[in-house]
Length: 379
Image (cartoon, rainbow, N blue to C red; front, top):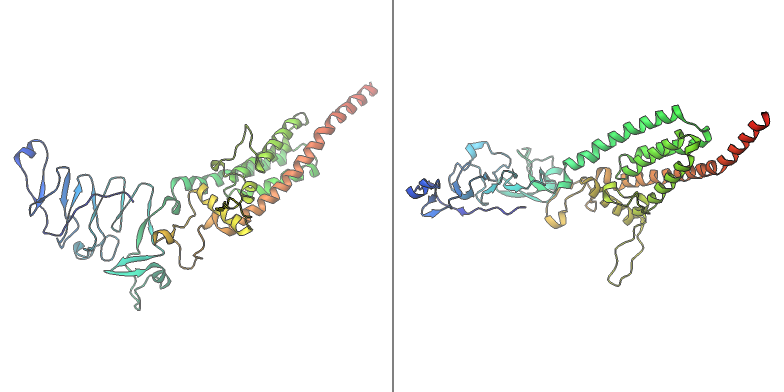
């Protein structure tokens, strides 16, 4: 949370105290019972109808207060302000969120866990949510759900929108186009095209995972394999091997492992555990491997993460969720495991495609010479 400059003054509303010298300079001082704000500040009680608090804020800041029933208080002209917390000043790039200022990379989101203030009392968000956001022992609904400033990876930001919505839609359209083109212009027999067709099928499901770059390149490689003329077989094999090397964790001048690409699933699946104090790297079990992949998934999407409740005391983890979970959605343990399974199937189909292309490449020369000999014999 960014530092806010505010000075709590539990006195009557500020009285403007204008000095002639300051007016000529364009400066105006505001004071209250002898306590004066700086020339670049304003002493404001805006939104405080009970006039019990005044606060010095920079001139370009907007006052941010927490109300009795949270949200934007509309009862008694704002008289329900929480007087136990000093008002804060939010900059133009910040947003007021129930008494706190959210920075540009934070979102004002509903608080699902931890304690929150309401009606001059403290409640637990998990209990309130479990009670359908009603007051304890009553049928009265809570007027405004508690909100808090949350990290960027807990809400749908611009980066997440690109990777969660735009790229998968583009991938689906590309997969449909490649499938139609391959089916229309394929050069080999059905048995030779079975591997590439399976690559496209399995890669389609990877479009919704953080291995989307693997899926897109697999679709392009599979399409090129099916539509490339025999004279291009050697080049197709070259790029097949190059991409296969990257897929299983290797690097080359053409492709390197990078979080921007979503990395590759083989490197993530066999990633070792943390190094102990003795310098020994323990064997990572399957659960830890999936958790590791889920964490990388949330980093790639910049979304699908729970705010750390243990560290911050509050967060967006719903009461019905497992408290041990750190991710959800596309990065949940179940969906990550689902994507890894289809990635393995796609890799097997890819390997079969490389074998077929290699055989075709090695026999193409003999076939060409046999065809020339048969043509010469006929002549």
